Image (tube, rainbow, N blue to C red; front, side):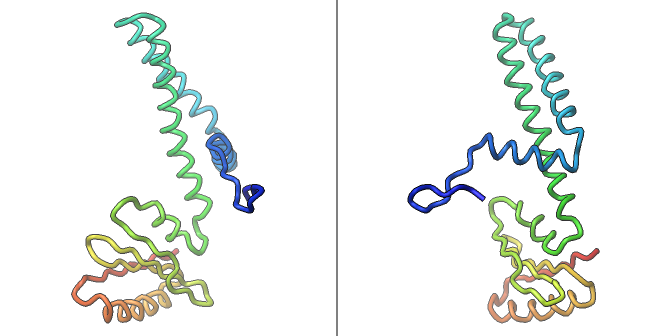
Length: 169
């Protein structure tokens, strides 16, 4: 948890600390992340430095190589960190909600609008195609839960289409 400042609000976590936390989390499930991202950094950096060095001079080539290598490192690390994060939530209650949480502009995601004692969940996604209900848990109970939620939403939304999906093991 973030430290609290003197006025009681939590202190913001810095970018480098967040990167370090993401790296440690990724390293637990992907031990080769350092080698792979380092190889991409060096490989792309050397190729770009060489090509730009041929066209221009060595100093500009070295600078372009470092920037291109850093960009390659960020892209590869981001993909591997995302894969590691999804691997950690796989099989747990709320995993579908975590996957829906990465939807970008144009989608409004509300996680766990309905929860049962057996941890069946229904998430609501609202976007241009309409209302999408995503249920996760035991297949037979989730189908019934989705049917109930679909009826509730149909009373409110009128002509807007409602889609339902069941995510099960």
